[in-house]
Length: 93
Image (cartoon, helix red, strand yellow):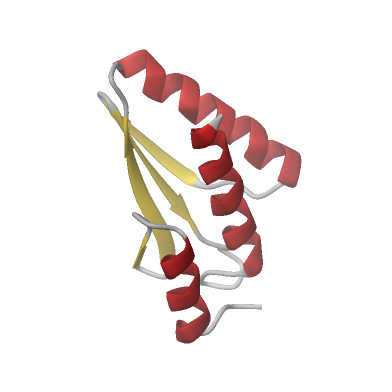
């Protein structure tokens, strides 16, 4: 079920750096070197595969932009929130 605007705003308050853009949660992560970003993208991909919920990712030199949305609902769902929570945990480890 698609989250309400208020639920999305509450989610954004919990996860600094994420923004709501085009019915998706989006964040750009910066890394000291290109390969650090690539390794991060692989870790996100592995996590996404485990949960069968796949974000769009754009690797641009030392930056990785992650876009989370649930395509079949046309917006953000609890599955996206769970994924960005896990992505944030990956950044801490």
